[in-house]
Image 1 (cartoon, helix red, strand yellow):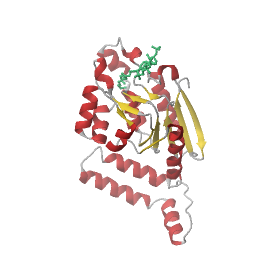
Image 2 (image 1 turned 45 degrees about the vertical axis):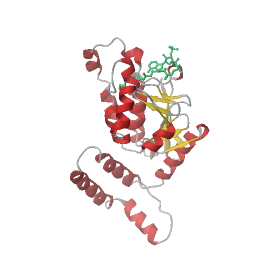
Image 3 (image 1 turned 135 degrees about the horizontal axis):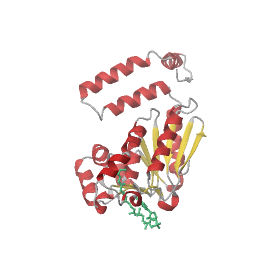
Image 4 (image 1 turned 60 degrees about the vertical axis):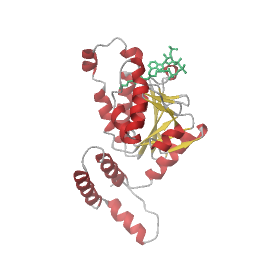
Length: 257
Ligand code: HXC
């Protein structure tokens, strides 16, 4: 891996992926995105890992897709390169994925954070879709996920003016889960990850799928999907363990089976 660092056991059962292209503010070139997708797939397949944290540096989570790599491309070049297949792979990660964001999360960087399931931000984080300033528009979910997260008028302003919002505004708008001082954002993401890693991985996977379904379908279909996944949890040993532990007044020991 040239542009990322992967630590499968950064904390017990919690893996860390660090974007590591500091001079370019973690600009997301194709290889970096392919590395992220490959790492997520490997961690998804690793039974020792229950939750994944994705982070950048203190200065930049990621300043967007690599403008220098794209600058001279034609539409047909873009079509053939088909960078979004790799984004679709990232979206299909089964384990809970937490973005720990500090500094710039712009363009594709903001979209990558929003592709994660939760976002822990440092006070210096700024989220924006500045593509309009370079004559294009968001292409990896910015007009869709941002709008769902912060509502139409805020998303419209961000996408049409390119102006970013600060962490505190992102918190008020519902884009991020929490904002902490810059020295603590990664630890806070690990704390959140650890609290999820204690839960049944089977239930976490089915619950994640179900929450995501809320963005993909109408209510009736979503409720139906949720109900099936709820029933499916009763096929797991973790369900027996979780309910027995409650009755016996002890802490459950979930095995992910
Ligand atoms: C390529 C980038 C980059 C990017 C920064 N750099 N962002 N290179 N692609 N997106 C490089 C700069 O060229 C520079 O390298 C180095 O990183 C440091 O950046 P500076 O501009 O010198 O830093 P600063 O003055 O602090 O400004 C930071 C910044 C600015 C505000 C984040 O770099 C900026 O506006 N970047 C572009 C943000 C953007 O437009 N993102 C959207 C991209 S389009 P050199 O070698 O020159 O010193 C997009 C589409 C997504 O994301 C579509 C789906 C994937």
